[in-house]
Image (cartoon, rainbow, N blue to C red):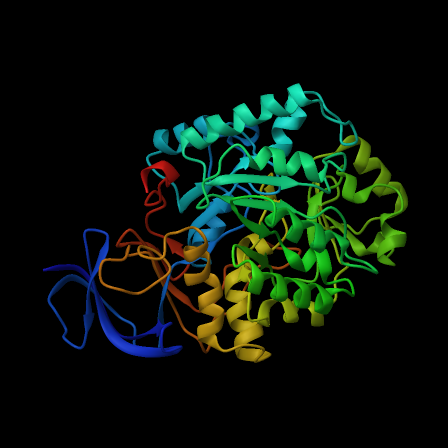
Length: 454
């Protein structure tokens, strides 16, 4: 007898690029049956009129800060409720605690809301050496960081990440040297760009050049915040051409016209507003004592000094260019979700249903199956997990999201992250129901996925 039967739903057949109606049977955490029979099961879900999708895979988010905020799941609960079942943390060169400690907390808590994959954050190790954002690095310090990254790889990290804009002193050669810690082509390297693409796409060109000098697959992180300021089309043209020459290259993007990061970061150094052509009022603060307050120059400078970890939302990108990055033939959907004290940008809670509701159903910028591919199969392939995740197939992991394509939409707003998405009926992790109708059923079904154990 099956553990769970999902009947009457439609699932994405990516080979035929269409939805296919079938009953899907789950047993011991795997998909074991796909067909027309209504096999006996301990639990039955009627998914008539619904889409049964592989669980969404967020290839770029920022994990919990257990070290600074306590052993509580905040962002991964938001991820789970929007249909995400697997997340990649440690992005932009930033990790909140050692990988060993992160794994131990998941084990201590008996699991996680989502499956976690982690990268080794280069910038965090740079900071640990006492280097400032603009300080050059010595050869001995580079060797030290490579050893720390090597230790993370031994702990099961899937690669490494860089936040070039956050530490502008990081050189091209420094990045390539760090990636030389391993020649495993299955590992992933990812980078937050050096500077916004305003007037030129030099930052994109640098990242493409990095790919051509390293063994690992290279991920251009959150292209929307890099190029949706007037340079999206030339950026996409350059990336698409580069991917034809080197398919190890790719990018991810999120569906909002505002980015978010810590207010004390170099992103907000003097002159940033002039470069963007924006004003202080285009910056929204997310935490007390100025939660949901638009900046003035006085408030901005106060927060930079007194509340450096506060996340600020910057409305600087063009909506039309956001759609271009999502609808492009290449690329993946990712949240770039980051949360501080429970607050932040709604992308952490609404990215995936927003793409399905706004960009697929309302704006009709891309077909449903293409959007689902960018949320499931493509990131799974990027991680080398396509035989297990990102697909509806016999033998695949039973990580699934069941949603209504006619009603699915994000609920979180820039002023309220707690409003849940609409139209997501079930989220299933490891063959068991984790979320039903926005209510958490089991928040400990996820685990740490170790690269060395794949």
